[in-house]
Length: 88
Image 1: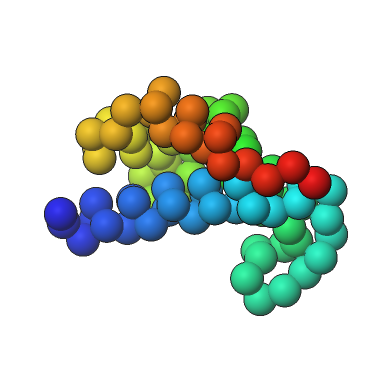
Image 2 (image 1 turned 90 degrees about the vertical axis):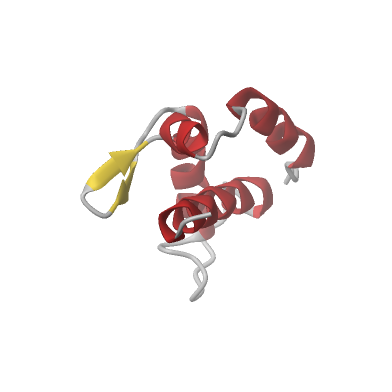
């Protein structure tokens, strides 16, 4: 796995983690969150489900783009995310 692939995988994992674990209605702020939990949840949700791209160097990649590059089945991954989400 190349360094670029490892970085893409890290971005994907962080988005999944934020979407699964963060409270969308929280305004708690800490060093771990970009703005607050709710905003980080929304950013992850937009990336994972609303086709909003994220910056990767000078490129902008969607969830689908990253799955394609990493040869990940995005439908199976979204099912796994849905099974893991924490309800608040």
